[in-house]
Image (cartoon, rainbow, N blue to C red; front, side):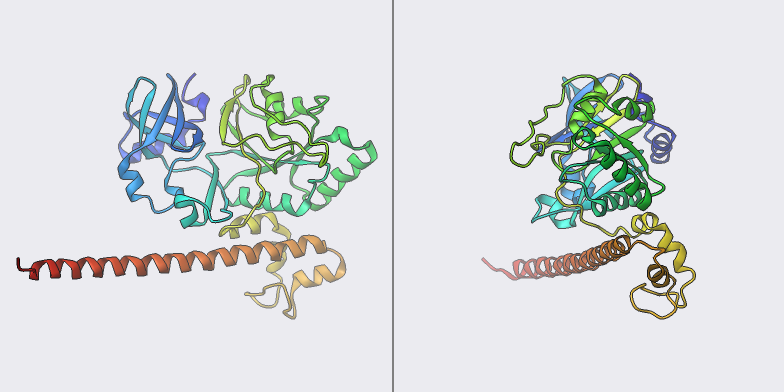
Length: 365
């Protein structure tokens, strides 16, 4: 296996040339767990850890390696290695971290899902988990990180043909430019089509809630049962959550796929670009609004509101646009507050150290 088989290309080679580190050993992060990483290069796999210096200088979770990253290694021996640097990321999928978080993830407010991904396969099941607004959220966070989204509608064996056709028509009506594939891991429907859509040397990340069948789909692509999956709950009718860590797998056709734990909440970070790209018709209409800073909520001469009133624009899509925009704006204002607090704390510590130094200088034994 070569570095190119792992997804290495001219982007990363140029980054190494700019850094002057062409001769340094590089590998790709293929799995992440508490306390360490698994990395892979042309010669094999290694358990790796980051240097103490990186841990000390990291200001957020984004400064740590993530699955999909290319990293520079040192001290490679006996299946062990040390991660010295992370090469610049070509793309990144991230979301707002949920709950209190842990470590630097909680401080930054951001959770990195995967990096250097070419396509994000958003997996939605046609049973109780089916939700167009959630799909839109996934599309926004993917596009914001430079990743092309595609939709896999799974568990098609659970509904009759008429309902299947209606759901696909509904999705195409709302997201006309999104690639849609229909699958069932029970009877194998569509799995071959997904495999054919995966290109050699390209990286594909599977996103979705717990129980939608991400791991089962990847097992189908791998033509094995290498990834543990849960049985369907008799009460909820949903698959049980089994995947607990992000991990990369390599298909026989040369494609690269990343499995992820189920995402319960798809919170927006400062996702303005992704939102604008996901709602391109609103971005296009904005140029026709009377006011350049139109919020598309109440202003006279708003082309977006006019389209909404005429029925040209879908009401649910319009409402979701504002919901995501407000979440992104709130995250941005919260991030500014966090930075201000960090600066204030830094100034306090600097002053305290100076005062302590003065007192030590005046101390007489």
